[in-house]
Amino acid sequence: MTAWRGAVALHVLLFLLSVFGVWAQLTHRILGGFVFLILPLVGVALACVSLALLVNHAVWGRWTDERWRRIFARVELVSGGLVLAFFMYGVFLTLNAALDVSRPTEYQSEIKSFEGGAVDVGFPISFWWANIHSWQKPGTTERLIVTDGERRHLYGGELIVVRVRDGFFQVPWVSAVVRDEVEWSRRVLKQVPRAGWVWKHLAVHYYRRRQWPEMVAAASEYLRLYPNDTDLPKYLIEPLYNIGHWKEAVKLLEPEAARVSDPEIYALYGFALTRVGRKAEGLKWLEKSYALDPGDWWTPGALAYAHFADRECPAAIPWLERSLALRPTNPQVEDELKQCRAGANQ
Image (tube, rainbow, N blue to C red):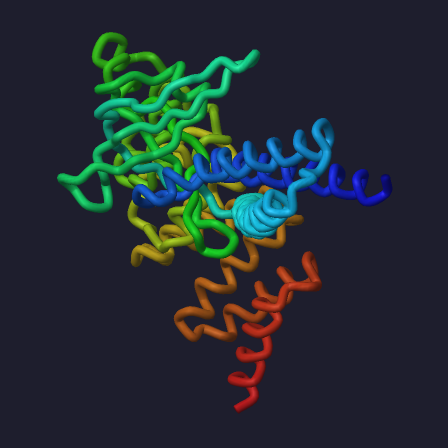
């Protein structure tokens, strides 16, 4: 009886592990060929085998014929090993997605057709994939698993955006397949060109797609209609700073700096000016920001770096000291201050 219960428990566990593996592959989708499309179906087959073995143990008991005992033992061994492999693969996919902190990159494509279907076994089980135009190899077709929700809201011939994230283990995975909001926004704006919310919507989706000039143009149009919304440029400016697109940063912030009284906007705009060869003008904006908000550590740090980058250490040292006083644990500022003092003592 103890052996019987242990066998039943083992097959219950293997069934649950196989279901988890299928769920992980359908949720954290990997771009690829036919293999990645067929793997979830293999997982479903393994789940069915595990369920059949479970029923065999729980209801009918073990076979009395020695030949069938050996056959079932081999089936159990092989299926159990495959289930464990699928489970570990599912764990890998789940960790790759759960620990991923990268921003999604958006790729535009078009759905050519859907394939798959649904089976009613007392409750619906569906498996769909979309044939889409490949953005990696133009002229070819990608097969991509889609969720039930995506299948309900999308249709063949529709322009879509595939959101791909880098993955914690550097294995790109698809987090969502959605309607192409950029194309939708453009169509709305052709009819209602002063729809401010749609301009903002368009700017944010250009941001997600990393189309910086288009993002700046859409955001500028929105800010022309709603100049007091300083949150949007602060949100959009981050990637421009990170990748050094200073001209686009200046273009985005220049009209806003002239319209609003916001020390953070002044500081961001001023530092961007120092990066495009307008240093004297940029320093004035940074000093104006610091006068309005002397408790902000970032602005004196930006003033210091503007001088430090041009090897103007005597001018940089006071600002470095102020920044460090406001934020004592700042390794970059500490290093720059050390270099400036060493240079001044030589």
